[in-house]
Image 1 (cartoon, rainbow, N blue to C red):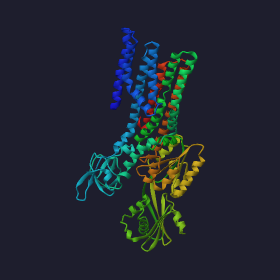
Image 2: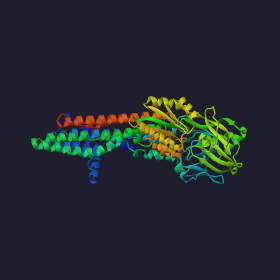
Image 3: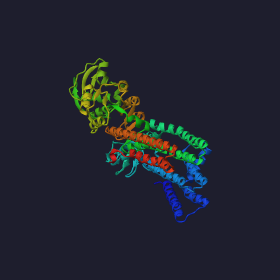
Image 4: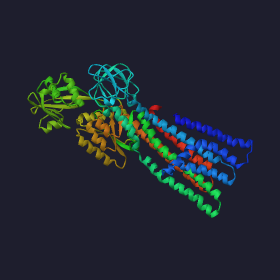
Length: 628
């Protein structure tokens, strides 16, 4: 509990004690003086409600009249005036309104604080400093924002990694839970990538930075979290607009309820009291806080599971997803390729592998890396010339005076080279020299452990169709799709062809639900942007894909999509429950109060009671399946 909340609680306890004394003392010692009665009632009223009255006066001075502070001040003050004018000396209702309102506000504050805490914990991932190694070997502590790419930083045991980089020397266990939601530490050694925001549990690490702080993982995550609240769902926007028009309408309705019947009947006391009850009931607190709190809680609960959702609007769309399309490499598969077969045609295996390795010499694609690793020799880039990468096809370059081609079937067809089929399952790299076919290399990629579980889980949570889109050959793509239980697979696709298929799927399923696309590569960014909801892999995904995505999975586990969908559905269900419950109770008691069947105590329940119930219901959004 914060200091402000503790002070509010103390005020409520003191005011409640004074209010109890106000109710009990006259029973023991009857007091007839109405001025003394009024003074006795004002003590607990002012003790608990002075800040509400002050805010009301301040907001009126700034032109903001119709808010909950104004409604409560008018209603409570009116109850005091009514009790004094009538001579009844009964001021309990006025004090009770303010006391229970403050109790409701305290509940609201605690609920919002708890919801914010789940997201605010992410803010702790921001490192305060970094240990920069200088050219002379000395270590200087400096701001991470001042460190350039390529610098050497030292990360001691227990310290948070300040910048993304590659380990140059040392090994350690890394706690990634703040970013990925994974509790098990990850063992890293020289050559491994480390991302900012994680904690070095043991071992001394020397890391060469690969990104500036502004481009680092931790900076991007903080930016996503800080801006998530600005993207409201339809339900949140509805409540904002609703409150804007609703409050002045009920104020003028209360004035009409007080004036018109009073002018007709002359019974001012009865109708003014009903109008005050009407005002208390009509306060929109339950809706104004509980609906945004539901979405905020949903985003917070997701963040604890390593799922970053960029706004409530995306949470809402996700709940309506019926079709999910996946990229294959790095999304459903690990993206860690290995050469599993070499099939030369007219040259030796060693020469075929050399041609392929030099052709892939400048590429950063995982397939290219696997070919160079299999070659096991350094690439002399001076031997490569006229290098050109043909998107969706492969690579063409000059090596040892020969025109080398390395790529898929389409590359061979493009240059009229006759190629041979392969019975092995995997990605096939065809190699040709001077337009003469030299053979092919088979690259295999492992399926992620939870990919099959993810596909099964999606079908259980209401997704009607799963689709895989890949640039890989048809044989490999179909084999992986069959293993995973994916409904449809489109293979040998260029990036623009992926966009076309996604647009086709969106059109075909427009009446049944939304489409989500899940990817990780630079070439996936256009498709992620085009889908109704874009999901990117945060740990291994490219910056372009993460930037374009609406949701980021920090642990790269496809099964987290199921978790995200379940959270979105639960959040929408709770938000709708609160809207229906609050409006139903308020409309019912408003109607009864207009007819004189309710009093101020019923009004207090319709406002504070409904607010507390709605807030407690909204707090359920914070709890995810992983918390059980």
